[in-house]
Structure formats: C-alpha cells, structure tokens
Image 1 (cartoon, rainbow, N blue to C red):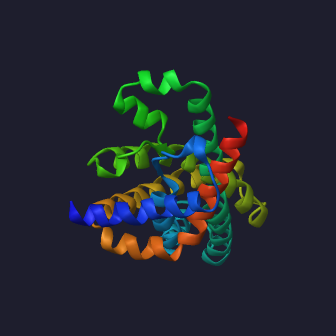
Image 2: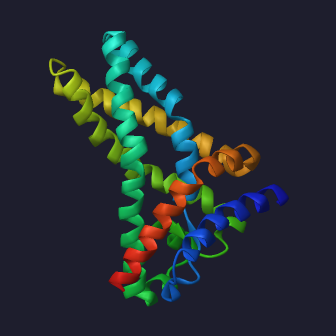
Image 3: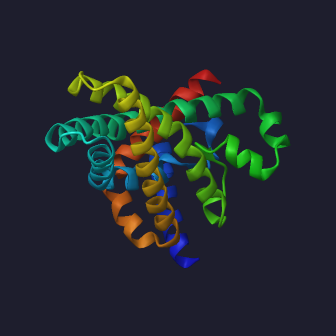
Length: 223
C-alpha cells in the first residue's frame, strides 16, 4: 500500500498543479482524472504496440512487411499520441458536465456502477481502492479501442488503397484487440508495481496537467 500511496501522490500532484494554474472553486474536490493513469503506459508502449499490430497483419493476411510497418507506425502515432488524449478530453468533459447538471444522478448510483459510468474521471479517494482504478482502466479501453480502430482504419487505407475493406477492417479489429489487451496488462501492472509508472508519469507530467487543466476550465464554463 505504501507503493500505491507514492503513486497516488504523483497522480494527485498532477491534479494539484492543474488547479494551481487558476481558480476553479466549483471543482475544488476533483478526484482522479484517469488520463494520468492511462496515458503514460499508452505512450511508452507505443513501439511494442506497433510491433504487435504489424505482426498481426503480416502473419494473418500475408501483407508485405515494409508497407505494413510504415502504415501501422503512422496510424498508431496519430491514434495514440493525439486520438487517445482527445478521446479522454471528450469523455471527461461530458462526464463532468453531466454530473454538474445532475448531481443527484451520481449520488444515487452504487459505487460499482458509478465507477463504470464515471470511468474517465473517478471521484476522490479512488486511488486508495484496490479495484476502482483497474475497473475504470478496463472500461476506458472500450472507447479507446473504438477510436483506434476507426482512426487507424482511415490512415492505413491511405497507405494501402489496394487492400480490400474486409481485410483492412478485420486487421484493425483484431490487431487493436491484441494491442489493447497488452496495454491493459501494462496499465494494471503499473497499478500493482508503481515504481516504473512513477518514472513514466513524470516524463509526461506536463501533458497530463495541461489536459486536466483544459477539461476543468471547459467544464467550469459549461456549469
């Protein structure tokens, strides 16, 4: 638990830094934005994810190795470095606005259901729970997976216009299922053994704080 405590301090430090950028009195008790948990392993696992998705296409569909690696690398750089943060911003903003407009709705929900519905941004104390962060991570893989499939389909199609839509769709669905299963394992390992996560999180600290601060400000404007 002491290791998890250090990890919680680092994540909560991200939140505190974001709040310190300006007064946000309506959102003072802001809980745990899951971008601080999901983004560091997603970005640092980018190379093995590219390898997994490229190998899937080459082995299953007998696609040429060179074009496959180029297409998958480009597609994943867009979906992981840009698409994932943007998707979280949309989900988190929608959640904060909904809960701000309907506070009774969130209060009435059982904790397990609230964790699923509020997976983008967990409530205060979630980092101390042994199951809330892992459950929220698993839930978030669903919209992130859908975004990645759609985004990478469009990018890879540009690189490989002769590839049939059926093959390309099957490739993106299967490859992203494998890569997100891997990413979920990496994320949960970070929860269980946080020392490595702490180093990764520190390296993307500026990005996560910027995202959290932007969502907080937008949510405050929409309240």
